[in-house]
Image (cartoon, rainbow, N blue to C red; front, side):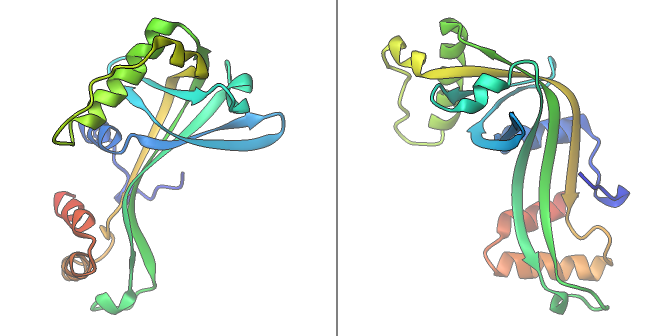
Length: 192
């Protein structure tokens, strides 16, 4: 990913926070000579530098992924930025947050490990709702998925949040983003 210095994030805590908050992404690999991508949720272990997820057994991507170098892309808030919002000259652009993770993938079918992945993903996401569903399913259902574990070799993090603009331009962009319904992205600009 192309990252000018003023948009690069290197703080491990900030990167971990972003990955955990935006853990649904694209698993990109090769099947023969074709580039393929599957959208899945991931679990991130910052200490072990591992990403874990699962694919449907019917998805051919898993059959070619073992020991393959893969790319995972995660995206946060994003929105169009109009040059009308600047005091000085500018061009139309896009503010966004993204992480690219490279690593080597391995597939697994161990039922206990698969159950842990499914249960942990479920618990993390169910807590957002007033009556969370507790994992309660026949373990035979796990035969329909294949686990994917990625040993991370590199993480690139880019927050393009108008840091290259004047303070007044940044304030204007924040106000316009909030006005246009992109409050979360405007809030992220306040943090940078």
